[in-house]
Length: 385
Image (cartoon, rainbow, N blue to C red; front, side, top):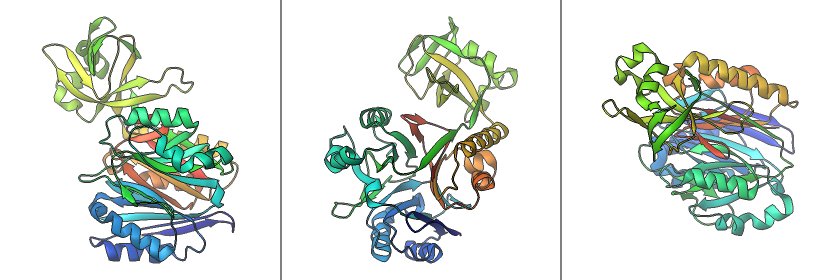
C-alpha cells in the first residue's frame, strides 16, 4: 500500500491504493495513504471487480471527503498505484491531480455516436481543442472498435485507455459538477486534455511474431479458410513449429493471430485470440473479421520478449521526454501481470526503474486503447509532464 506526490503548485499529482473486503475501510485506508488533496480538481478511480458493486457508494464518499467533483475511471481484474499492484483481490487505486480548469473536460458515456460529447464539451473543444483523451469502455458494447476510431478521427484526438475487466458489472466512473449520475455502463466515456497539458504516451506488445507476414487468400467473417493459397491450418502448423502442431490443445492462450497495421512505420500489429480450429476442414477462426487480401501472421506469448519490448518502449519514451513526469496512467492487459511476468507489479518496477517514483494509477484491462485502435496483450503508458 503506497502513496506518492509530485509536481509544483500549478500542476500536482498524488496516488495511493488499498485493499480489503469491506469497501468503507478500504476507501478510508486509501485516503489516509493519499494524504491531503488540497486544491486538486480531477480524480482517477480504479476498482477491482471485487468492489465493483459498491462503485456508486465509493465515488460518493470520495467526492464528499476530497471535494473533487471530476472523476474518471473504471473496473479491472487488478488495479495499481505507484509501485504496487492489487490483482484479483478487492481493492482500489486513486490518483488526484491539480490542473488548470481549462485544461481538461470530462465527457459522458457514448453508446451510439458523438452527440453527447458535442453537447457536453463542444464549446470547450471550440475554445481549447484537445490532443489526447483518456477513455474507459464497456467490453460488452457491440461496436467499440468503431466508436474508438470515430472518436479519434472526428474529434482529432489521440486516445489512450482500456476496456473494463470484470466477472460482473463493468461500471464506468464519471461525475462532473452539475452533471448527472456518476456511475454508468454500456459504452465509452473519459476525459479530454487540451494541448496545453504536457503528455507523452507509448504502448508495448506482449506477444512476438513467430512466422512471416502472410496473406489471407480466402476468409469469411472471422474464419480464415486459406493463407497464401493453402489451407489455413497447414500454414498455421508450419509457423508454430512441430512441438505445438503435434498437439493443438497446447496453443490455447499461447498462440494468437497478429494483424499488421497498414502503413505503420514501426511494424505495429494488433493481436487477436484464436477462437476455434477445425482440423478436418483445415480452417481456423480468430476474434476479428478478416477479408481476402489482408495480412496476417502468428504470434506467441513470451515473457522474455514481452520484458524486452517493455524496456525498449520505456527507453524510447525516456528519450522523447525531457521533463520529469508529474503523473502517469498505465493500462495493462489482464493476460500480462502475474500470468505473463510472474508478478503483478513487474511492469511497475520497470517503469520506476526508468522514470522514478512518479505518482501513477491504472488497471488491468480486457483490451487496451492506443491512438485509434483496440489492442490486446499490450501495455499503454501515458505520462503527464
